[in-house]
Image (cartoon, rainbow, N blue to C red):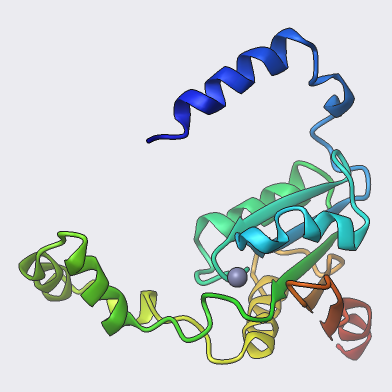
Length: 191
Ligand SMILES: [Zn+2]
């Protein structure tokens, strides 16, 4: 059973009762901060609570693994929009331990695709067309290395102004405790 009906029912009442009023704010993040994090369900509410950030204060971008996997993809573009259009001055990459992207394996993933009805010849066609599925569907071995890599991609992006601070952290998905992997303040002094 799809969730759509339940959600639309809730939404109707939500709007009619004016329950949106406490959430009214602007599109500009008050704390001039953008956070790139993971879509993991455990940190859906834990992340803002553990960081002490509220509605209206930050731009939150999420994907599987809190990664920038391509310099010209939608995540990097979102971060640049946050900087140029929304006055963000600081970026935090917040990944988490026990992430599903750790150890993601292309072969196992494509085997699974077949059990979902994606035919092998379609996968072969993609390979023949030069689509690098192996690289695209491979996660990371070590979340801290992945954070360092993503921070570096952001910091060294040719369109990212040097004054923007870029930090990298890893969160415990149970307690919310943060480990600082890259302190952008220190990284800035280094160069
Ligand atoms: Zn994750």
